[in-house]
Amino acid sequence: RGKKGSLVAILQGVQDIYGYLPQQVMDYLASTMKIKPAKIYGVATFYTQFRLQPVGKYHILLCQGTACHVNGSERILTAICEELNIKPNETSSDRLFTLDCVACLGCCSLAPVMMINEQAYGPLTPDKALKIIRDLAASEQQVCEGGKKE
Image (cartoon, rainbow, N blue to C red; front, side, top):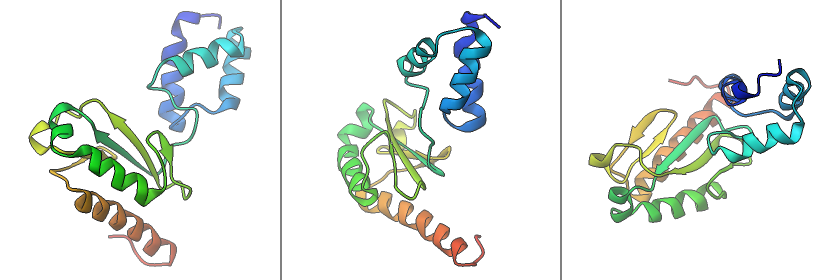
């Protein structure tokens, strides 16, 4: 209580649990830590690591580093955005996919590369990226229809 210096660590812990920072939890923290809600919101929006909205089941990180950029990551970004009807930092309407662009994934030998839930994919083309995404979506559809996921 009242330990303002630990706010970032507390918010990180909350996000680890929920995958984002729910408004109710931020309100609770403001009350118990005796901090104005605007202060918590300010910290949560200042640091890019924090999310105020839930992340999709499949979190896509598309690398925009130099190696990926020169090998066509922008075309892949366009294809993914059109396929999912979202922009970077958004989640698809079915809440299956969240797309984020990152400066570098550290997999330059696979450029262009994306990571989905900690699994790296590359080298990619727009078609390869869309096949991966469509396969994930199809596996979800199969589960919803009573099939078994392999």
